[in-house]
Length: 415
Image (cartoon, rainbow, N blue to C red; front, side, top):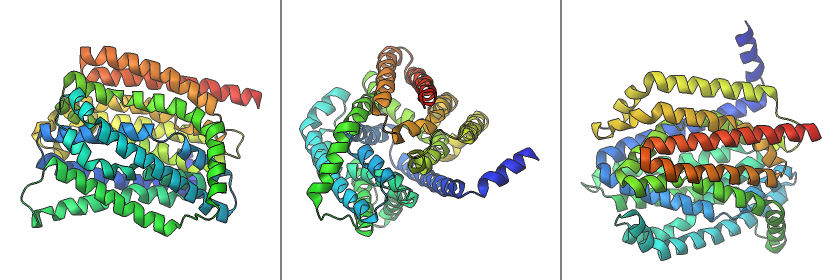
């Protein structure tokens, strides 16, 4: 009876229903992602898909750099805000910050295109230059996610990825009516134009307010200086070095191995959905809470352990259903990656410390994790290839979790 009692208890509460809606949207996103990967891996061979994955990885890493702490600062400001007019004004300020970050991202990609191509020994310089103007839209995703989490309007988080992926898939499915073959560049243009169309529609609906823009930008800038930059200084080190595995695989092995690794991560990524849903849904509540409810840890752990068991039992079958025989190697890495994500997802409830504006703690954790990431990737990937990247990630995320536990207990002791 106890499991049934627990289930009836949690499903009757509004936060649980919100988490479930957000989780369902993430599952929808994963289904769309699987459909897209199915189409892409049947249209492109391993080498071509590797080039596609390389461009996505490079722009993803650069996008992390071009945040500068604005979006997490906006998220915290919105979490503490109770004024609907100020909310739209803060969104307007965030839009201007995202636009500036996007232009910087586009220009930097254009300038570094040949260097990136030479570093990875892949002829992607011309491709990056031609796509670089479209990269300006990438920071808008961070803006919309910060807005949805900070205001607790989780439907924004639901749509920010669902709409672009849906448009991308529809475009891809309709392509045979207009052309017989598809290349890497065409696939990337489809991806980014779908994203642009979706973000324009969402921003028009949300109606950011640009009146008294100077005051709103001043408020956002002040919060960024006092909190965002500290968080950013840790996050940029943490996130870019966490993505260093992709860079090292592309450099030390080849783009084909990067494609295999990215697909394995994509298959396992649903594991983090429930953890991310909990973190996103509870963020605004965390800003006014004294501690993380014990049940959050319990339900999160049960979910993550269940996912590891699922991949242990079904991983080979999933890969056979989703991908062509060229990508059968993906199955070898599902269980090891799921163990990494078990540790990674266990740290999700500690977004509580972010909601409390404890940027110096987040920074310290991020720097420590980064050291393990860098050392692990540089030492283990040349020796063990993809498995070396997985081991390095496991060690880094384990340290991350242990430090979060330490600082959270220290926070509770101080009160």
